[in-house]
Length: 120
Image (tube, rainbow, N blue to C red; front, top):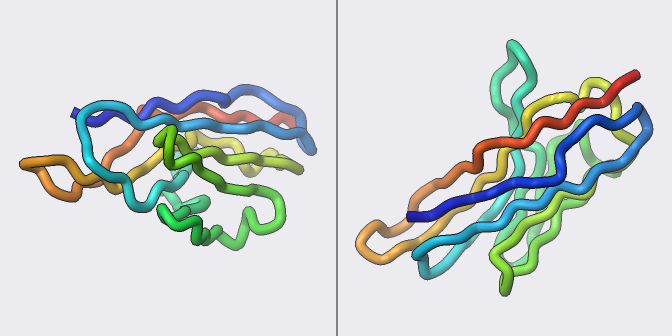
């Protein structure tokens, strides 16, 4: 069983900052890519940022220059530092990870989501 637990969401004013964290726990051997996605009301879930185990990153165009993804492999944790937040960043943010576990192989896991609300 693999669990991803997010934290760090909340309410912030436009222009403010937040830092999201996601820690993976359970019985697994390896984690490759980890990432953050978001889903606003009435919209599809979309990629925000992703990072490989080697530290390569990719970002959605709408967050470039404002959000930074990072990870600490030894802690199985990924972070999303968000600055210059805008009301349109309001969404539920989900952590995602590609995890390898014995007898299961590679599987895709999701956290429960954390709400980010940016007021104007």
